[in-house]
Length: 76
Image (cartoon, rainbow, N blue to C red; front, side, top):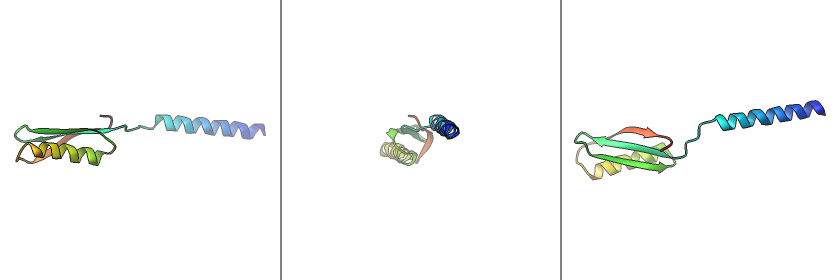
């Protein structure tokens, strides 16, 4: 019985350690820029795809040039 308890405690410790060391993305932010200097940005999005789309859409609303996402941050 004592041996099983040690394994359970060790397993719980390893599980907690792995869970706490995993990176967590709380919110995505991105920046999109056009050749003429116009920009758009997004923040507090739950996924990268949505943040990229919003940044490009904001940039595109302000210019006729093509907008390109230049950076994204998973904790923005």
